[in-house]
Length: 211
Ligand code: PRP
Image 1 (cartoon, rainbow, N blue to C red):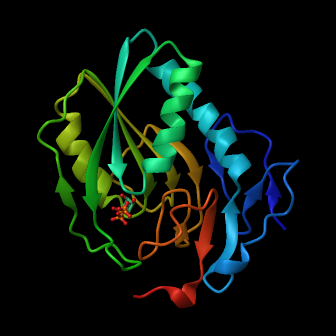
Image 2: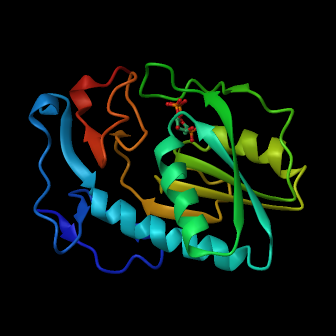
């Protein structure tokens, strides 16, 4: 049974069983993924509600600026960034700009390789910069990016949709959800290239994961 959440105005702590809105039906895994996905952790409605609130938090922090340069970490951050940036433009006076950083550390494994490959990092610029990432797990990816990008910006903030609460030495300014220590997919996040197109955050079955 999923927990019903009504307050999205601050970071939402997601319990093991998952969360849904009051008016959403109990979420079920699509038949084609039943063998691979254990359960739905965060429903589409909850993602939408928290992202709307995140956009308000961000615009309140960056108030009085004219332009915000948003840097999205590919590939996982793509769907989250698309919704967040549209919410920012819709709800605030801030003009947004968008660019991408391609970055990879997991390959086809469920464990971070510890080595973060970066492509396109030398052209980053902007006075007010928001780095947008899907998930902070070990924190290795974010730490490297924050060091490289943060030093060039006048004002620099980081926004992450999901945080497992593991990474201790990285600071994240805006967090959507704190999730349990499970391997998640959906809404841009993958396992071995799959599940990115799902509209919700799902838990991948343990038996599927390569060590
Ligand atoms: C995932 C995720 C983050 C990073 C987080 O990317 O999108 O960028 O790992 O892990 P960390 O906190 O342990 O560094 P991945 O390497 O799987 O690339 P992808 O986004 O292209 O799938």
